[in-house]
Image (cartoon, rainbow, N blue to C red; front, side, top):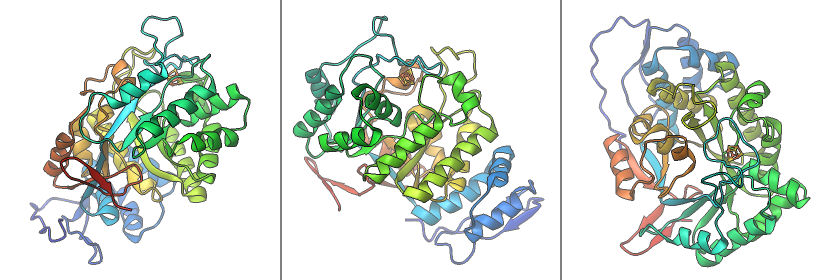
Amino acid sequence: MGCCRPLLSLPSLPAVSSIAMPASHPFQTHAFQTDDSRLLPIRDKVLAGERLNEADALALYGTGDILALGWLANWVRERMHGDKAYFNVNRHINPTNVCVAACRLCAFGRKKDAPGAYTMALEEAFSTAASGYTEAITEFHIVGGLHPDLPFEYFLDLVSGLKERFPQVHMKAFTMVEVAYLAKRAKLTIRETLEKMKQAGVDSLPGGGAEIFSDRVRHIICDHKIDGDQWLDTARLAHQIGLKSNATMLYGHIENDEDRVDHLLKLRALQDETGGFQTFIPLAFHPANTPLQHLFTTTGMLDIKQIAVSRLVLDNFAHVKSYWQMMTPKIAQISLRFGADDIDGTVVEEKIYHDAGATTPQGLRRHDLVRLIQEAGREPIERDTLYRPVTRTETSFTVSV
Ligand code: SF4
């Protein structure tokens, strides 16, 4: 733990403002300093624990002073989590890439008869779940396309079959978009659909499909998907029946700062209402092999800034994740000093972003994640999906409840 971290001695800089860490903060760090005067009232609010508003969030996106922004986000992150940095041992399962939606942001979905389209038979999904990894996995992350023919029962049987074979593994399954689509196909309400999923063994929901809530942007990047309000309504219902979920935001395409702020504030408002979100995960857009491939990929500055702004604006989210698959392990590692407290998990086999040109590895070993975290000067904590610490021996693991 870094509670006795010494104050760094800094060269004297012509800072417009500097402020030492308040004595009540459990961690000590160098003084805050910035040459961007817009950050001064925001610093005061952050240190006083006051909520940031829309204008504050826009100022944070607008600053070029990434170190001052990072100082503020890191201050909040350390106040919430100290030096802890979380990861898990998980496996992604994408049962089908067949999808009716044809989102322009996507390189994963295929029409049914298109080259590369696949749908796993249930037995194939079960053997995929069991294959390719020797360390005990605590979570299956299950998402896929909106298949026009697969019945709702397929997805229920998938989850219940996995639960039967791997009773100790947490099932984080189906985005809000998939839930809404399956409800429509099964002619059920969203609540009924979620309840049936829960009965089958779904333990929580991932955060995908949120993209950007702005109608203007959504019409261009994913106009066949549910809209932002429907995504939020589905999340609300999931939380109401006791299913936690994550939330994401796809950034770095055609959205602007106002769209990003709108997205964050809508998530924050729903979290005030339900408390059902666990983790916010900003997802860097990967344009390769999508109809938007003329767009640039995100830069390191934007990735880091997105993490920091998220940490500062989403004051009611316990966790902000820097997902290494999207950001690269190196940026994810640095983000642990800019507001992130989680870098996701081992993944094992990732399809969605690799179809979109991601050059990161398909999976990382547990010890790779531990090394990334330790070299960032943080304390690695293996967690389960609900952020309970996992204790491992050579052959087994225990979740602390
Ligand atoms: S983003 Fe999801 S819903 Fe859209 S085309 Fe891809 S798989 Fe289908």
